[in-house]
Amino acid sequence: MKPLQNIWALFRKDLLLEIRQQYSFYGILLYIGSTIFVIYMAVDTPENRVWNGLFWVLQLFICINAVAKSFLQESRGRMLYFYSIVSPAEFVLSKLLFNSLLMLVMSLLSLLLFSLFLSNPVIKIFPFIGLVLLGSWSLSLVFTFLAAIAAKAQQNAAIMAILGFPIIIPQLILLMRLSRAVFSHLIAMPVNVIFLLIALDVMIIFLAVILFPFLWKD
Image 1 (tube, rainbow, N blue to C red):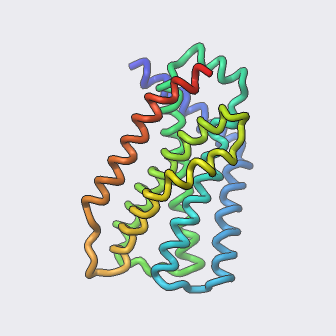
Image 2: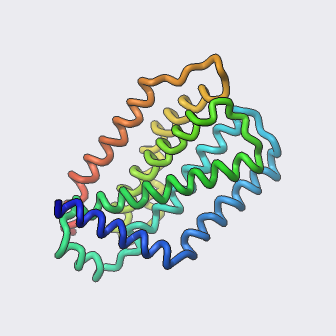
């Protein structure tokens, strides 16, 4: 039970810091709102394929902005303190959990604003909401692990973006392929692709748990 308690304590610490330092949360909300408003001014009411592509590209950049600070905000002294009280697996799992929650909230808010400004051509709304939650979770897992790598590379957040885009392309392709089904009653959502996406997410979690200790010792 102690590992679970440590993960929960670290998760609660990040959550309390986010609640107290609300400028970070509102900064991301401002980014979402201003980006969607610019898209609205540019294309007004896009067709289904354009709407779908713009939505997922927006999720990608929201994730980069929301997750980038997860490791970069931790000072060297604080990391040394965590090193003495918890294991690397517990630390990285708490980060994955917190960033997943943060990205789920941001994705739902962006979907709401997207629907208000750019209408909502989605026919199967509940499957699409589930897909948005799954997709946001997938993006957060990838960029959380990349943020850990970037934090060790002289705290350069640009490295996270450079490394992330080639890795995230397969997931974005899968998400856009799945999203096509929600715009028509005639197209069924491929279940095998959903399981493939979930399998990729599980693989990323295992890779983070296995590889993060090597970064932790640095």
